[in-house]
Image 1 (cartoon, rainbow, N blue to C red):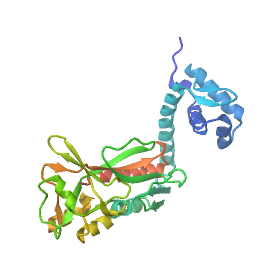
Image 2 (spheres, one colour):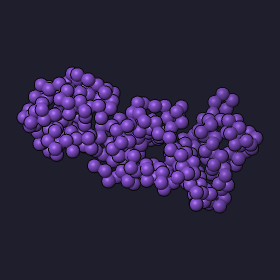
Image 3 (cartoon, rainbow, N blue to C red):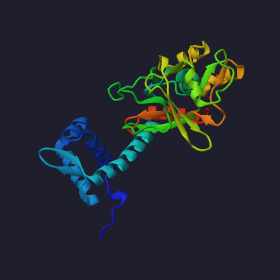
Image 4 (tube, rainbow, N blue to C red):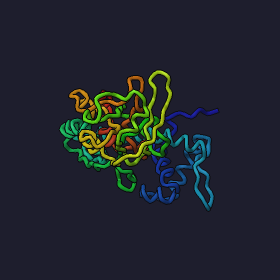
Length: 302
């Protein structure tokens, strides 16, 4: 019985198979690669014969990848991505170039991303950066966005997007010191204050007991909704209402006494995960370079 080894495979066939899967048919893959459809079909059949398994189910009506074909595709995708990364590195070892388009909320850009991004642009001046400064949901494929940086309460809900964690941050339920000078004694007292809310979320505070794990849910009726933490921060400081805000926007004001943390010592809000979301593991090399650069430096943020 012959044993298959790497030297028996034409690595270009792995690259071809990735394109076939992503195109969902031979004709489209052939068009994108500018080779005859018959060549695509013949090489995939050769690959199946070498592996001894069916990768594709063929009939006149539909094109389907077999279960083992899907698994093989995952391995091939890793290989192709790494090969393209190596090729890009060799070709540009003295001159990294390309462009990256990513989305990021304004407050995240101002408090965390900008200094890192400036360093990246100084290090790789030939990589063009395009930033979509928004927190609104986007169609990453339609907008041709490589990745979106977002923050969400833990745990994250299921998503079709790939998520790469960058860092976690604590949230505090805070008020202006002109509204109150001390934490509440009972959680229901929070409902005595006017409140502010993140507009894409249900107006409800989820509060955890640090030691028992008990969770309390308090519905409130906000006087204002906004998906911008800077607005919520200024509204809190102006005594318009109380709000849940990230650590970076409250610590200086807690230290100065302008804000008061409202929860009793044994209670806390869920932390938020700041993460990068993207549609495919096959990021362009410049996008992967930037994301790795951000991840390495954001890992130490509070």
